[in-house]
Image (tube, rainbow, N blue to C red; front, top):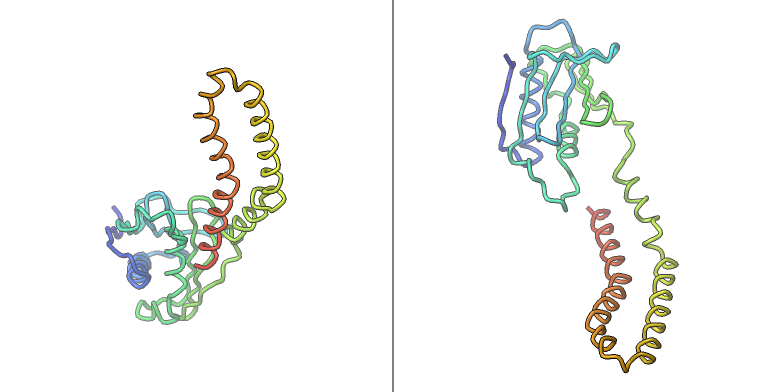
Length: 222
């Protein structure tokens, strides 16, 4: 049987922090010799579970001796929201004050966090009742991804010029062929297909590149 289970409507940073404090408090209140906890942040199903953990052996208690909070309102985050579920939980954890668990009579404890991909990383240390946030050494994958996209060939001026020159060459060749074979009716009818396709090709050279650039700027400014 679970120590603690709740379906939460929390959305804001403050609301999420309160739920996480209650989650951890319920786990710490259980009688146990261990002083390490693991917060399993499941982005797929938008829940955070709190388990007993042994960092030396890298073992998590997989029994029912854990606590969990399901964040129902965070199930469907919009694609434009730069902070996904994992980031929202991590940001809330980082706002814990030094006296968060002062009333729980905890001398020493360590709290680790992990998502569905990364190895557990220590984020909180409690020493003599005082809480300290540990800065994560994980790579900032979002910044790395943005840099990788920015350096992609498709966003360079050289790529744009290359595509534009190829479009001009194809268009000139097509015009010459249309002039030569204009006497054929099926050739004239084919313009109904060729013109939209040709204009779409030209539009893609400018529009999609600019759209990606604007999206990247919007993400970086958040």
